[in-house]
Length: 281
Ligand SMILES: O=c1ccn([C@@H]2O[C@H](COP(=O)(O)O)[C@@H](O)[C@H]2O)c(=O)[nH]1
Image 1 (cartoon, rainbow, N blue to C red):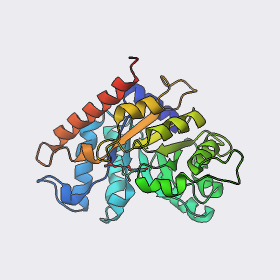
Image 2: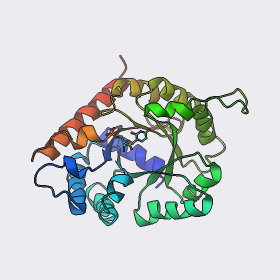
Image 3: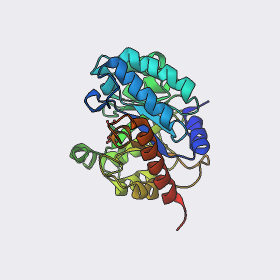
Image 4: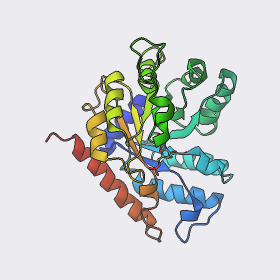
């Protein structure tokens, strides 16, 4: 099954646009979870078990594992996720971007070592740096387009005088991803919930692409404004899914022994808020 179809199935089965981000930070773990690589595995697995029926996707951020030498635990976690939540696709947030030969190794890491369904990429180095990922049939790749951080303005909101119509850089990325770069329909875009006007513009330029939208929760993005800007109707072939990520607000909803229950409650509340925003007024 293609990544896009996996998303559509999870969206419909779990009635959800919520992506649960897995950004495990040992210093924030509740008591009872060890602050080491094994604790990272156990903490994330508890979160996955608590939210498996509430999510359209899970998004492990690789830096939180690599920084603690927990790559083997990430491999094991993803294998367990296939048993605990087989219906929920996994987006490896790695933000890779390098020349083709190196990109081949990164693609192998994401899809063969970790077995992710999709990966996040920087488009900065151009199409040949993206091509190795879309060689993997059925896998997805999300290109950074208009990121959620304030510094995203520095480059993404610059005009390209050399391109017809002088688009902003993020608009150009959206056009490329919807058009010539999307050879087999495997691309999506990352757009920050902190910039709903830009989500709306990206949706206009890329009507069929899945949008991965981080920035609600800890970064303060507005869930309802995000959905209004990016969601364009139930998952027909012509409307791209919206995947709204929240990490810290769910993972650290409680620092006590009830952390998994609290994470579930936070995930449910976010999922419901997202769903409410797509209901007609
Ligand atoms: O533009 C971007 C791209 C990626 N991220 C990632 O999403 C999560 C957000 O975490 P929160 O705790 O919900 O703020 C994190 O993994 C980032 O690396 C992003 O925030 N913005």
